[in-house]
Length: 430
Image (cartoon, rainbow, N blue to C red; front, side):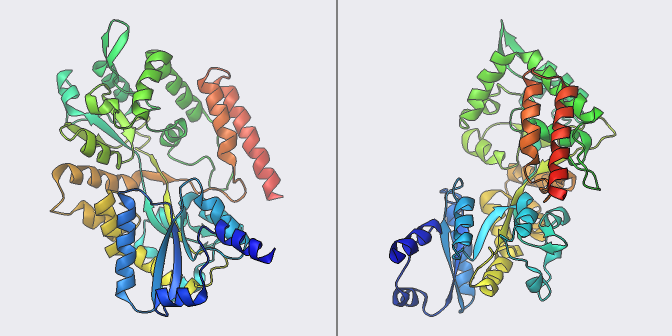
């Protein structure tokens, strides 16, 4: 029974047990750091494993071994491994939930390491702040993202729009989209723009407000005039094009390789800067530009939204000091620059991101998009999950769906969402 239990626990942790002499022979006496990530694609896995190889070759005391765990399994397996007392030493986790994991004692408090090696100024301040719980960091920022507008320059010229002047406000976005629309009978040969392709409605609510769903005192601010206006604005786009046209275009977007933006069937499209890698691979001749998300008004600002990932030491790691050494390497300039260049990804390290954006050897289109990605981080809002309202979006999103489906007015749906989140906060703050 004991043997079965041990095998079960080791399986939950995502790796197989080995005889002690076999481990010793494999590692040459070095401390083994088990590093879990979900980067298993043919593009990302070679990049992270090259970084690991470089770290292993840079010193003689630590051997990092990479364990790939699929996206849908990694965090549930990590929690099972923590509960079993056999966690990995380093794991890649999403950044907006870092404080919550700190509160739940699932991630290690890194203050003892940061007292000796204060590396906090390496990273964008908003990313660093997202790792804090009660003033202490529980994860080190690795990468991030933002949302930008891609637009078809040839289509702009075709309808008399200046291809070097993308829309800057919602009213201009509507005006440009109307000019870009092209119909053949009842069918759209080209749809100018649809705001819920590439991003969800909450991104536009954040864009409109320029702030999170909680105020500085931690009070929910879901129900307000700006959010009501935003959701009614989103509904108007669906009314303009009709459900059938929207669904037909969305089915092509979901196929990725056949995204209608590649073929000119969609004039403007919002996504992360890494969407460019699909353009590069599937539509290399596309003449396009990039811009910040249009602002609700000229005065409201170009707020975008971002997420990202951190490197954490799970609670109970046997090799925390060695794990820290690897995390420092993983998030320093050299490794971050390599990750950014190979994956075309926004990295958390400020110096690395700026070096890539200014790189003279980068192809023109690559540089255009990456410079916008780095510049846009200044206007990007991150939304750390409040420890007193861990599931608040699960209460807001159903009400947004009810509003967009016409089941509730924007006024009523947001009132109901506000009430539900307030009850959640009150319950958890008791």
